Every structure is written in C-alpha cells, then in structure tokens.
Amino acid sequence: MLEEFNIKKEFLYAFREPRNFFHHADKDPDKMVKFFSDTAWLTPLLASELFEKINNTQYWPRRVLMMWFYINNPVYMPKEMKPQIDALPYKGVKDDFSIFIELLDHKGN
Image 1 (tube, rainbow, N blue to C red):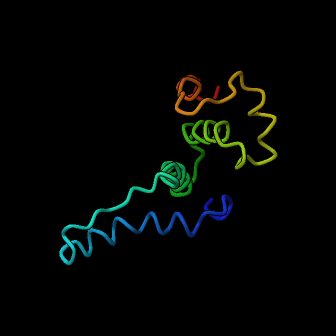
Image 2: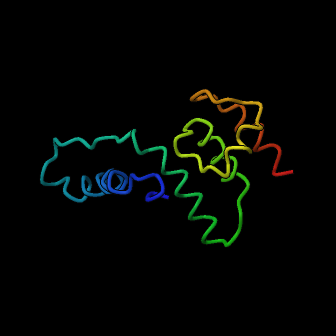
C-alpha cells in the first residue's frame, strides 16, 4: 500500500520517529516528538490491511474504510474502483463520517 501511494519513505520515518524518541528520551529529556499528521491517516488503512492478510479474509469494515478514504482522496483511487465510488450518493466531505457509518451498518449486503 505504501508503494502504491508513493509515500513509503515518509511513512516509515513518521512511524519510527516516536519509537526513536522514547528509546533515546533519557539523553534529551526536553525533546518533543513530532506528530506527523500528513501520514497519520495511513495507520488504520495499514492495520486493516494486515488484519485481512493475517486472517486470510475480507473484512467489511476495511472495505468501507477504503471506500471512505477514496471518496476523500480521489488521487489515490484505483481506476477500477471509480465506477463503484461514483455510484455512491455521497461526494465526500472531509471529517463527515455519515456515509462511513451508514455503510458499516449495511454489512456488505
């Protein structure tokens, strides 16, 4: 997924930074850890992707999360998903989770 979005290097740096911060905290007690909001959105996507791989199953909430993500970030949307996303009666507003909640309740039926 990181390669697909072309942000592997940035995400890995942001992901490792807190670990490094705590590992070396005794050497610089006044240092602050930076929150990388530019890549934070990837954490639930990666976690749900790993969940599916570990359990060898498709997980409906992950599919919903991916639909919501693509609606709000069409630059990352695979071409084959565009017709499905365009068919939804929702055109995406950041931080509006109403379609996400509605689709979760649908449970893939």
